[in-house]
Image 1: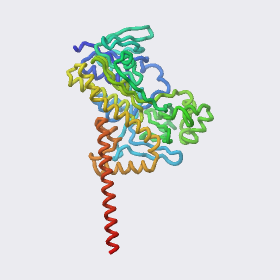
Image 2: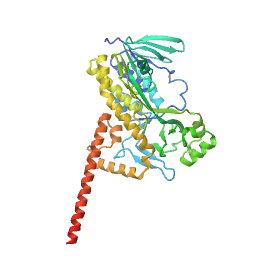
Image 3: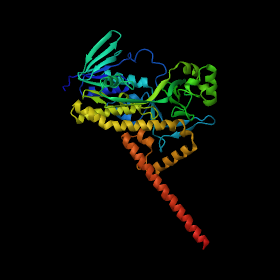
Image 4: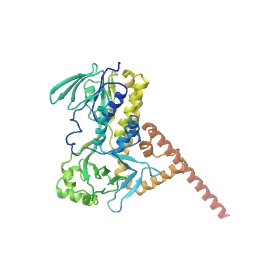
Length: 443
């Protein structure tokens, strides 16, 4: 393939824009196709932001193309979880044993705009907005788009789908019987609320990710540079205490006063947000293979969408871009070799973080408020301080390292086994000492 062959990237979201930057750096002309209008103009879609928790994996990808400092200028560091009980004062649970490691709260729209600006400033990158992919011939790279001006066609030697969980590129490969897919949706949805600034300042501690764990449901809140908080409810979609069970203004006010009593005084638009913001779906999407014929490929949510409960969706997608870039290096830009290698390198890791994200949902909505869980976290941090580098918590390995997710799972299992064996040994030694002491007393 010559440097003049244009690469089509479908989806000008986070992963697509970052991918365009990496490809342009390699000397490829890039056509970015996006079904939405230009997000830098107009009004953002209501209730769809879900703030991102940008961590080391995402920052590593940005650092490689010189964007880390610019992105972090719009971010707020969060060094722990602030747990809000129904009764009593909030309690901070640090993310790291040292207490100084932080994930970074950033608005999806702000990050998208930064990446889009960076991509469009690079030579050879062009963007076509209001282009909805409705047809793709995987054998030829022929694409058909619906636009406000009518149907248009385009062609590319390689087509890359970075168009999210509802990927049109994946849908086209499915129509051509070139992959299989599964989508496992939770019986939960999400809805966005807002806590505005209070007296010109943050209404809550801006250095933490706030969680209201309520057993089978929860709310979280992340800080914004304008001193507001973006809140997200994660509730069941049906049954009692669900989105379906609350409709009237009085019912909403009564429920929040009972279950989230510190929120209504801080959220003057609570009822309006609740009644008018949409309910989003939560699920895990898997497909196989991630590529067809070495000329159509998927990455990010288009290949492996996950639930947001580890804050790793964008971080994982950014890591995909880094790995694809690495595969192109190793394969001398032979896409027919690089795309299968990319899937081989990333599929187990994508599955690992999908599993960990589901597990973390249970932890966030239920366990974080438990005294047993809090004691376990204190013991875990004590082990990290006593055994630096040898014992590292799962959360720190996921959020504050670039160790592949599948290796994180394996390492954490080994650590738990080692700690369990140590505990058994200590208990055995204590039991032996007690028996010996009893014998001496009987003498």
